[in-house]
Amino acid sequence: MTRRIASPINMKTESVSLPLPLPKAVAHYRASGLVLWIIDDTGFPKKGRHSVGVARQYFRQLGKQDNCQVAVSLSIATQRGSLPIAWQLYVPAGIPDDLAFETKPQIALAQLREAMASGVAPGIVLADAGYGDETAFREGVTELGLLYAVGIRPGTSVWAPGTAPLPPKPWSGRGKPPTLLRRAPGYELIAVKELAMQLPVSAWQSVTWRDGSNAALSSRFAAVWVRPAHRDYWRRTVRDEEWLLIEWPDGEPEPLKYFLTTAPEEATLEQLVFVTKMRWRIERDYQDLKQEFGLGHYEGRGWRGFHHHATLSLAAYGFLMAQRLRMQSDGRDKKTSLNARCLPFPRITSPGAVQRAQRHVPDSITTLRILLGLRIMQRWLSSCMAIERANNYLTQ
Image 1: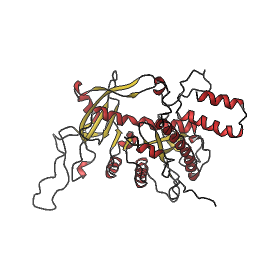
Image 2 (image 1 turned 135 degrees about the horizontal axis):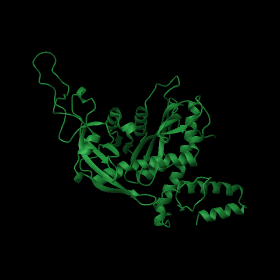
Image 3 (image 1 turned 90 degrees about the vertical axis):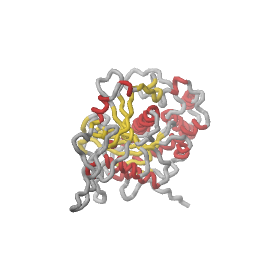
Image 4 (image 1 turned 30 degrees about the vertical axis):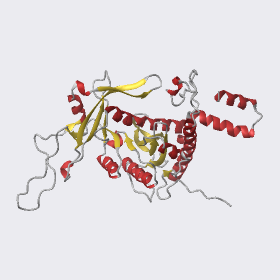
């Protein structure tokens, strides 16, 4: 009898949403304490113009506009690992007939709603300024009952600590009673960059958030309690206050990054920095998916094929991530040296460059992929001495 497996492809939108369990990886995440939901997008360079979603648009890896496809993803993450669980192509032009245009923040909100409906462990939503600067996105996350820590741009306006919009005008007794908030001279908004430049020296503290490949990662931060101000003159109630987190590294002429977060008021600066900086995991996911799992190797042009290809890449990545978490849970990585633990994944060197020695990390995605390949090949080439020697080397 043939067993039919439920497809992870949403047949209405053809977007990718991996079914639970994500081969048991989510169970590992639930037991890992802090859970984060990371929203981001990644691009795929294209030469032609006939593939679905191809347009001249901002390509983050290049830092400029170029001909490319862009896909929006949602990842679940903890301190131990991360895994994309939703994936959808952003289509600025050439939209399929049965779809309506959606911005990247709208796609991201739909992925969050679907994840909650699927029973994924709720997490703190992380995103960069491309999403966080959109007031509708932040409010949508709050309406879902989720906390967030998102980037914003330097020109974003807020109400400084201790200030707020004025209440509606007193009713004169004639006409309809005023209900909208007001702004008036003396009650001015301030850009987050200007607010940061006005903070006293005592407001800045050095914080170390994790170990890097060569040294601990640290910078200067300040956090102030502010109130978002976007078009609040069309609102009847003031928005709640939230944290504005600012990063200003030593030696820089001005602050480097700005974040808004709905973390509790009692949260410490170290906690705010740690959670906000966890967004780096999505960049590692994208790198592994493209370099190790062929995510960027799709050569078709259709909407459905693009998402089917992404499904296979994400499923393979999820399988190896589950194996990696299982190895960590079983304590099989205890022999890893302290220096090796500073580098969660092996570094990738250019094939054309002079090869240098690399630290071996037994539980990295790259190593697990190689071991899995060797196990499969051993079943067919069990007498091959080269495979046996390679396996012995990797498992030492």
